[in-house]
Length: 153
Image 1 (cartoon, rainbow, N blue to C red):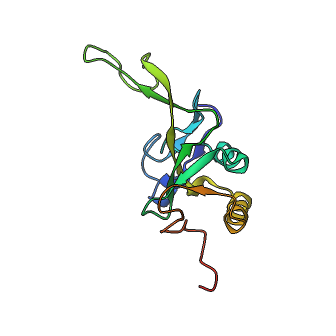
Image 2 (image 1 turned 135 degrees about the horizontal axis):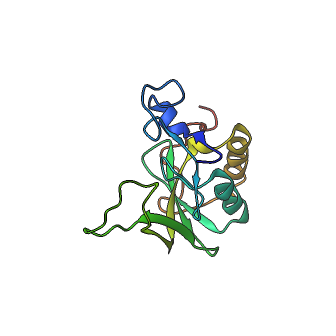
């Protein structure tokens, strides 16, 4: 793999360079192409998330988790999802040798907030405070992202 990194979700769960497990179980991965997703957790790339949030062409679908949200396309380019579509007669031995990769367009994707940099987290808070983020029902984060707090809390 080129440009490898440790997925922050895996590191939170005991993965990382000191893990007794080897790649990919230790969370060492890269950004999958052509959909630009984390090869470990499947999250949309943080720069893509921020660009879409800034452009205002996505709606955030809140979850009951402080680390995750779904991102729905709202007028922008559809998201892409790449996955293995191996048939029952396939002789694929693993993801590195499989030739059955398929990419499709999707309207909604997931994003894990652990992938944001500190600067990106600050910018998300600015956008939230400026009411520049569109939300699906109920219209707000009912469980705030782990890096946020309510005013006065």
